Image (tube, rainbow, N blue to C red):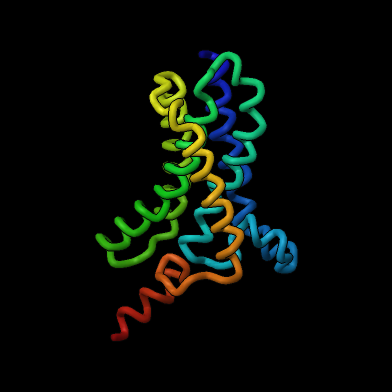
Length: 176
């Protein structure tokens, strides 16, 4: 299990180290369409969910082959962590903005860090318990569905608040 703990710590550092520059990659590449599928194309909450999803997915795909023999539940646990961390971002964001009535930049950064740590902590706990191993296929399918949704909605977002810049939607709400 020390190998697993080491992978979790490295995973947290990897997601944090790649998520931060990923926030700016779309702009840095001159709004390259391919970059936009995997990094935020605007300031919406949905697009910021990519900051955990794709780095954690890449990291997971790289460590699963090496851990599978020692940790038989690694795939289901990492898929659970990816989903939990990704969806923790909007849950925490909308909770604190509802309480405060505004968006606070430092809290947004804290949410990214907290969601990343929570995702890997959950993965670690689930890898040890193997409770979700029977659901590996379903969890992998859910990750694939979210992956496709990110690709589809990057440039064609549905009409919903999660796909809008929260500062704009907050401003519009306050003007009515």
